Image (cartoon, rainbow, N blue to C red; front, top):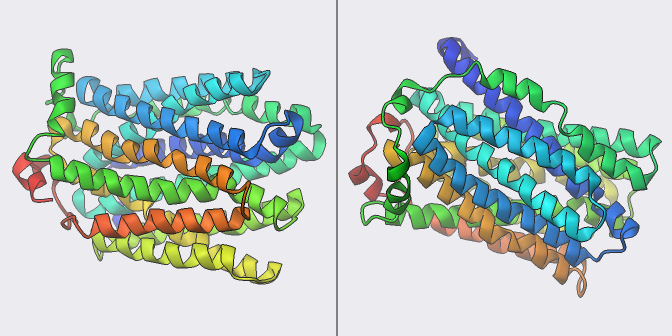
Length: 417
């Protein structure tokens, strides 16, 4: 932890503010995947409809991320971050009052706008605040907050469903998801714009030209390859996390407590994976780190769902599954920020990360429909294998960006990607 003692007070405040925000987003977002089995029974909806809600949330999150990237280039990183957390908290709360499938679909989609926007604005803010030699570690630590939020969601789910009837339990979970947002708003009022990002903020008239500039000849290759990595990384991850609780309960026939036990192993592994990736990417580089974790994901996901094994063996294999799934998203924040010049960084990062979300939204929907004609585990394994294979191919097309001083990244440097 010598590196942590080296960084400034501003860097620490920014790090932990982004960490807290991402953890709270993780709580509210992962609660939906946990209550899918309840909604299937309570409302009598099919797996395809449940997958559609998850997919719509991802699409809306992608659009929110794109918008937040443009807003952060225009108005600044901190202001964009504050807007997104207020939006996300509001629609998380309103989701508790949905009366049918259609209402929940709309409210979860609107919630997704804030969820996607927060990652983009926070990632750019943190990357521009942290010094180059510690940027990967900081981004990996913040990504681990999603695991802590996921763990919080599982604990809340187990507690609430143990004492509250299912018809009301899921509503209570969505309702209390708004409470911690006040802490995040307080923290963000104490974080300032990084000096390197404060000067070149675009005017409103410059925003659309800046958005078009990520497709300029000098950076279009970077944009395309980065977007492909986003598609594969999100496609594999969301296919697994959206349907894993349902897979464990319907095909492995685990109780709620059993599902929580298996998820606890995977979540712990996810957190460990983020820390491992944070350390590795500042040592071996972003590109090799992404490839390494993607190959390991392909192997472990297919072992997990295709090999016949008992519950004990599956429990042990859950740890590498969660660990390797964490490595790629823990690297994307640093990688994407280091590929773009400052004037279009928010827009570029928002597009690469969130275009992947838009396309990957089809993966949970596809898994749900495939699950009607084949075992759900088989659908998960096939989709995840294709997604992570795409990550490997795309990463081979990128340069190494480790230790790149992002304040000096130019369009010419980006074009070499």
